[in-house]
Image (cartoon, rainbow, N blue to C red):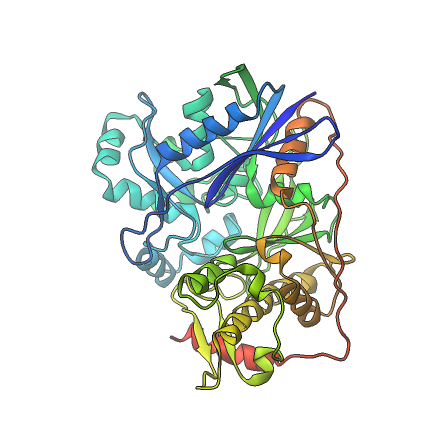
Length: 471
């Protein structure tokens, strides 16, 4: 059996296969353009994404089935008849709806979203973005009036356009703030709160199953799995049991911990219950989610400012930890996610002096992301003890200084994955499950143990976070 996994992420689309040696192989990758039309707005061109997915599918060659993962909260509007996009994709990082979100909070609506969807009111989730599309895109208004408007996360658009199936999987639907987490159906009350027409939303289905077939250069090929990228990574890590946790350090840092059949709702800790996956014919598996909006994006920003030229330069530092020298960075460049959920928070450097070098500024960025990740993990561990070591992947997991700092601040072993494509692996494994096959590949991990004679000032970091929140 030969399978392909399509990883449609925030910055690129990637095609992966498992080769004849049972090893994961990247066969194609293409980046797409980021649009920033206004302050706080982030958009993608849906037509570009469709072309990139098609190119990745074709590059995978002849396969028996395809799995595809998506960005999660990114969404758009399109037409039911023409299947043409009526808007750009509003990306998960976008916070254009912050005023509407604050108005809903002021009117006391957050208790409903927390109890029904398990999610706080935040522009991160899809619901307020979909409402914005209906109210502000003339073509969407026209389509709604004639009964042809479709709204959904990017996966539903891809599937509708490429296979003719207007569906979204339950893991993705759980990220919209429109799905009832217990009933796994669109919630009338939530749709009314956000003013999203429920009739325009796709059908919610399991994570594995029949998603239709896509035409490729090698013939029609079935799609048998569709899932959020972070949930795919959780599956790819082999996290199956309650307490298994991972963090992916990509554009943002996303922590997920398996909670099994239990919905753990701890809004006071800023943690989000979510659906990890639902295999066809089985009960859903739930997880706890905690997001740090800015991780690798902060390093890319620092690089664009000329603070360093090559990522190899920032693997080690000659100076002690920046926070020990009084220099602290809070990576709230697009707001603060878990456990604070404040979209108006902004990044801050504290303790700057004329003595600090560009290298120390970058060092403080790495430390700030580690501190933020620790905030999330610490909250999760207070709900369900995290089993064994913390496994991580993503670009920043290749930085030795960062990983050691994370191990020190978290006071636990951190195991970075040597395989860089665990999101794609999870997508492939889920696609195989739909065909009754179990895809096994050996994942190798490094090991960073906490240095017991080292401690950092979490109090100092918390003080900096308080300034970020009140900026």
